[in-house]
Amino acid sequence: MQIVLNGESVEAAVGSTVATLLKQLGISRERVAVELNTDIVPKAGYETQLIADGDKIEIVHFVGGG
Image (cartoon, one colour):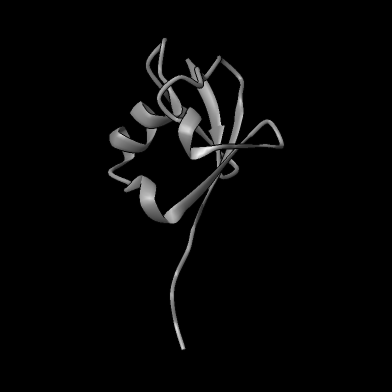
């Protein structure tokens, strides 16, 4: 299925969850925020939140500094 990830078209497996997408991308879930179709997905929902064809996903990485 096709999704839009951070503005780019990406292929994702049917039945993917937010957690499986992050794993596929090699992104650690600890320092990111995920938005699915303009709604923030709580970290507790990463394992169960299914991704559908055409979904728009934004992943934001938090970076420390000082």
